[in-house]
Structures are given as C-alpha cells and as structure tokens.
Length: 274
Image 1 (cartoon, one colour):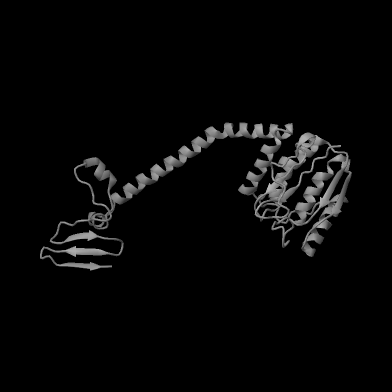
Image 2 (cartoon, one colour):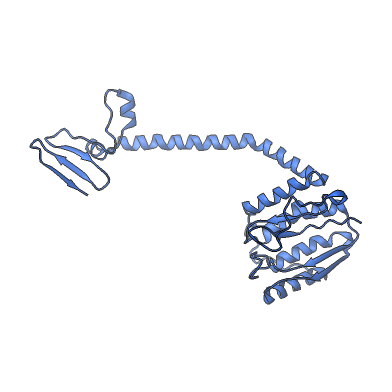
C-alpha cells in the first residue's frame, strides 16, 4: 500500500538532514505521497503547527483514509529543546495526537523517537499518552485571551507546501481555489480600505496647513514654515523654505540648519555659530 508521510519539520540553514523540501513529493507511482511542511524559521509554536495540521496534514490524511496510523514521535520541536529551536508545548502535542486519533478509527501506534531536553520530552510524551487514553484536555489558563496569530513566515511555508501538493491531492487544490476566490472577493474591500487611508493622509496634510496658518508671521518666516493656503491663494508671494528665511530689517537672517544661523549686516560683519 502507498502511505503518505506528512511531517512538519525544520528545513534549511544547514538543519539536519538537509532533506524535506516542499517540492520533494516523491516520484513515479509514489508522487504526491511525500508531504513536507518545511518550516524555514525557528520559534514556531502551537499556532503554527495547528495551522499546518488544519490546512495540509489532516486534509491529505482524511482523503487517503488510512487503516493504521504509525507515528514516529519525536519531541525535537518541544520548547527548550537545544536543537529543534521550536516552541511546541505539551498541549500542542496533545492537540496533534487527538487530530490523528480521528483517523483509522483510532488505530494508531506511537513510537518514541527523539528529543534532547529530558524535561520537555517527558512532559510532551505524557501529554501524548494522556490524549491517547482519552483524557480531556485541561481548561485554558486564559479563556478570554484571543488565540495567537500564525506568523507570516509559517503561512508562506504552508502555502508553498500546498502549491506543491495541489497537482496530486484534489482536496488541497480545492482549498487553494477557495483561498483565491476569497482574495478576489475581498479585493474591493481592500481597495476601499486603502482609499480610506489615502483620504486620512490628505486630511492630515490639510490639518497641518491650517495649523501653520495659526502661527505668527514672524515665527513662520524665521523657521521657514510654509503657509500652503497663502502660497496657493495669492500666488505672487511664496514663503521661504527651511534653509533660507529673510526678515525685513537691517539684518538678513539665513538658517543653515536646526542649530546653526548666520547674521550678515549692512556693514559686512558676519558671524557663524554651530
């Protein structure tokens, strides 16, 4: 029988063993039966793994409809593991175990494989066995807190895996089509949102112009604050920019920066200060 192997694994950056890329889907009659959700970054936790199960692992497994599930149960991805670099909790392992128990009428064999932090491996293995025994999951510590968002890097990794599997698994192809249709449906909403942001920026610039109009004339001329409404309305006189301001007095002032100034009098005397 042809059996799919859907692992969620670290990939790239020299991570052992260097295989498991999303495009490695098998060949010949086994094409499509190697499923690699290749996470390219560290630090992923329960939310990212649950998303991979929901979008890739479980749809493929349900369509395949196995008669027996064999699990090579490694805990390298557990939090505090010195090699895996992931942040899976015992509750995350228990969740994935319950998902797999829904296959093959619950016929599942779990074999301990890896894990390099004894405390993390022990806690995760205990959670897996508790889920296999049918124990209820513990109540959430913060039930009112919203679920964590899936990181953008994990979403890209999952999408890449789905794109590679779509030619081999109709359930994945249908899911991608639905996602594309949803994006097309939301495009008008996104355009309206972007238009609202642009209008907000324009309103902010008009507010700045009105605010500058309230400033004293000597302040605007000294510090180079332009009065857009005045310049646009009359047109014959434009306020000087921030690097050159003049006052109608025996002195001519020229700003050379935020902390520098220069005064030149009719006698030719000048002074620079920084």
